[in-house]
Length: 212
Image 1: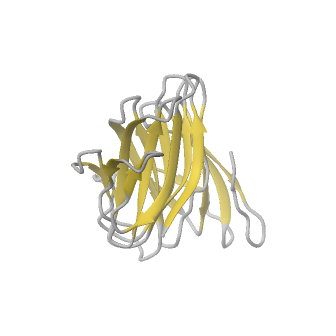
Image 2: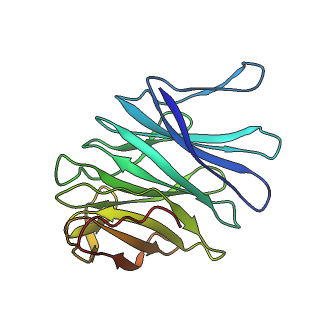
Image 3: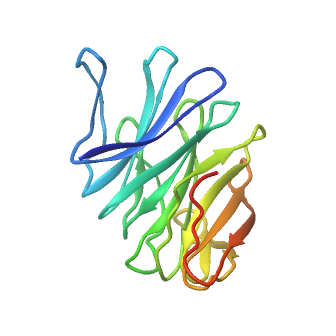
């Protein structure tokens, strides 16, 4: 199973894409030539790729944990940085570059449910920072955007009180408002990955934030 889920362009016309795959993902051009091989997924793993205006592969990255991981949203900024979001289960979530070297990781979710990730790559595909959002229940993120200054905005759907964490240190940097069952949020990080603010959408039943 291989799924393409999100696509975005930058001001230069380059293309960034995100999705997920099972097994070893192989990148081909139109002629069937192999351009790269993604890190093999335990169940489902996530890919992020960047192509030039002519479709030439510039770089790729993969993300994989001990179970099912899904890449949903991708965005760019005017500087050519690439941002990605999605969810991961339940442990050992690592970020790999094009050489299959581990360049980052995120803390294990508090519960057996999913946590969400937000990552930033520079114009050359070098990981800049990674963040996770997690609680005692399941979190999801479907959409991400960046403004002209490089501030990042993402949707979050969560149960209960949600912690916002740094990368593998697991240090908490903020909490989203508790919701009545299942609620939607918008969160913002600055260009360096520092948490800035959040807003909550919550009613008496199920409320979701899907696009931004």
